[in-house]
Every structure is written in structure tokens, then in C-alpha cells.
Image (tube, one colour):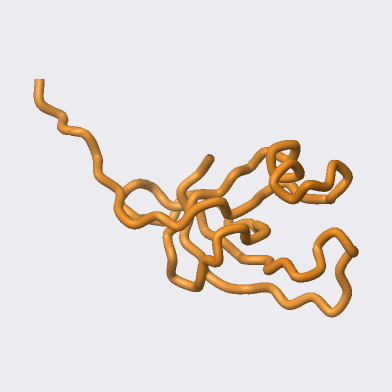
Length: 93
């Protein structure tokens, strides 16, 4: 899973039947401090996330398809959680 921030939504005029009613989000991977890292990607929303939310993105097609309940759905990335807070462990020691 990766930590990301929702930067937009994607509108589709035509969708496969297995994706109808689903929202597609543009997400930007971020580090634990919230700084952008890497390229943005598209992810199907399973957590009712909104623009500006920090989210957990599952980047594993089989697991995403299991969540959808469709073993043939063309899905690789899925938003599976909205993050309330990121707390980094202590570096003491």
C-alpha cells in the first residue's frame, strides 16, 4: 500500500459494466510528512475519499478485484482508506 493525497476526480462518459457507479480518483503519492513523491496515478475509490484527503492506496490488482467481487475487472489501484493522522515512531535510542 502507498500513502497518497487525492488531487482530483476523473469523469468517464463510458465505463465497463463492472465499474459503473464507481468513482475514479487522481492521487499523488506522498511521504509521511505529506510531501509529493513519484508520479500521480488513477485509483478506484472504495472509501468515499475527496479532493485533499490523505488516503491509503492498494496497488495490487488481485486484491482490488476481490474487493470489487469481479475477478475480471480491469483494476490495479484502489483507494481503500482515508487517513486521519500519520504518526512517525521515535528515533530515540
